[in-house]
Amino acid sequence: MKLILRQYNLKLKHTFTISRESIQTQPSLIVELQSEDFSGYGEATSNPYYNITVPMMIQDLEKIRVLIESSDNESPEDFWALAYSYLKHDMFALCALDIAFTDLYARKKGKKLYQLWDYSTEKNVLTDYTIGIASIEKMLSKMQELPWPIYKIKLGTAEDIAIVKELRKHTDAIFRIDANCGWGVEETINNAVELKKLGVEFLEQPIKADDWKAHKEVFKHSVLPIIADESCILEEDVAKCHNHFHGVNIKLVKCGGLTPARRMIQESKKLGMKTMVGCMTESTVGISAIAHLLPQLDYVDMDGALLLAEDIATGVTIENGKVSYSDLNGTGVTLI
Image (cartoon, rainbow, N blue to C red; front, top):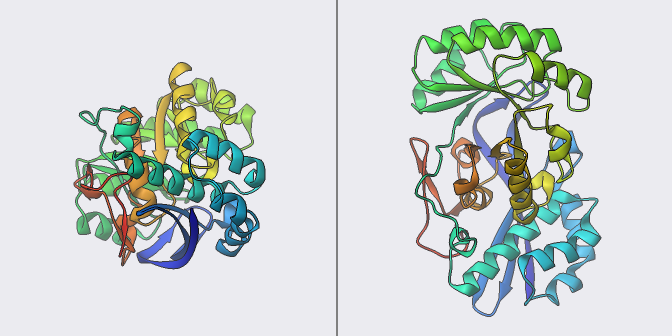
């Protein structure tokens, strides 16, 4: 098996702002694994919040190149366990590697990922489309640029309720709110009351990640469901989030790929929590991997490639929130 690493700098259509940062480009690493006449593709993007850069991921994968290239016939689960023993300090690199290997494995089997896992895609949920923090005029402009059935609205400003009230005047779409750790306990509880009146479905990670006492308080008193994001990184975090959140937003790059994400989804279901998978402004490479988890999800945020000025791959397509799969096997990805 041959390992190929490619760096990209993904340009966004618009400056993307959340409560803690603004970006115009997104550095990304694409991992390709070649075996026989097949290629599998995986992706992970850099992230300053988690202190991850593309050069760091490349360095970590190069250190185990011999191990990777001497592996070929393992199951994705066995390969992930082996790679994890060397990459447990860099889950982003592990994610890109795991997606690529799983993609390659499925292509060799002549199956799409959801077929490999025996998932039915008949009742797939719709993806939201994210509106980053900006002036109300710019947020409205982004909504009008792409009419959508569900919007995820980034908040964490002094005018959050006023923003949502104004946006609501212009659409009947479902709203989801992501404050990215930008609120306090009372602020969250009070905002939930007002936001519920405005057709908001749930709140995502309103409180800073490690304040579990605050999460518990919000969980008890919020009139809207609360979904964990920054508080749910690794597999063991799902149990910690139980009785502190109503659901979890699993990110492939944070947990180390598709293999652990599937286990986290099952654990969440066992605990009676809502399941969600989110993206990190990946290209269609990463988004196509997420798409095959849709049959197991209550919510999904997989609009990353839609935010790009120019994509680097083909794979799944999304129209009005609905995902359509490629005719190709595996994740269905081809690099452009």
